[in-house]
Length: 152
Image (tube, rainbow, N blue to C red; front, side):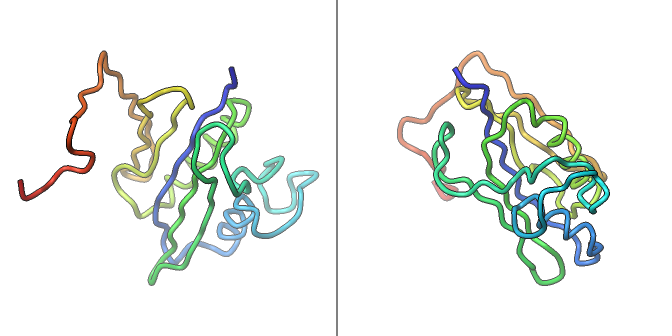
């Protein structure tokens, strides 16, 4: 059994994000820069980019992505990566850092153990990100509606 989790983030950031913050995000996405050696190169002590993987996911299914796009008055960030608990300290740090900067409010992603049916939801509010742990004894399923019909 592998200790792999799915991390998914989708959030917006302000246009006023400083260049060094954009550079750090781009580095984590594997878009620019090189491996840091001493923590004094603008990457704040991270050993390697956290969201640089692309292509088919090995355990969680689907595709690994990481994109930062200009979004007319700000930035849009989307990340879907396989992560290991050994990375949780760095992931926690960068997600809290993003939470202090995001303009998004509400659900901004999730963290899910690859064998679990129910993810923990990441919620941004008042400059912070919190994790909502969802627990159920059973999952209510609709046999006919994958996406609900709002006009039914």
